[in-house]
Length: 235
Image (cartoon, rainbow, N blue to C red):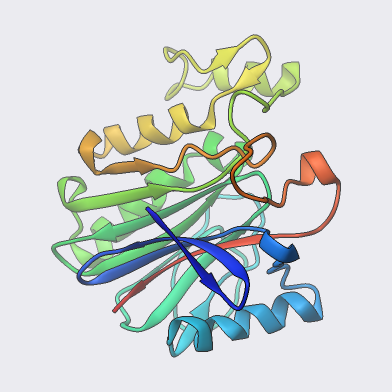
């Protein structure tokens, strides 16, 4: 993936023939926290910066609700659309952003998956909704996994460890190094269950907490409210 700069802000971009995938950084304190005036302004700036008509997002609640985007804002953690020139995205500051593209049916999705969403398999449920509503098949999906708190830095408590070890879907996987949880292994497992080809899973391999290449918002590290915005759009 390549880097682009817009008005001194850095984004990580993958541009394909029919779709564009964007992960923001915290370069020059770029912030997309929608609860602040600055964050709302930057969300609106996306229209100008990337020449899109609409920017869709949800009020994230760390659950498993998935919506078909209809230009309204509701409580959910994933959204799907086949509308062209509409950017849909999720906010993160340590959780996992996942962007999906159905190459055959020209459908896109944006998924927010913290440990709670990962435990209840929101990614699987997003793909299932794509299957039901748009005829998506796993072998036609491209998946892009953005910056998040990776296993090197993501220490969790005993209660969370037990929840994952007792989960039917995860119980036979190697997810822990001591008390450190690998969310990416969970995400890849969900994608594999949906027959997404390994070659079509693109992991940026960037830790929001410790990477030295990009400035990142990390709630665990900074204890602040800054947010990145990861989005995808059909051209």
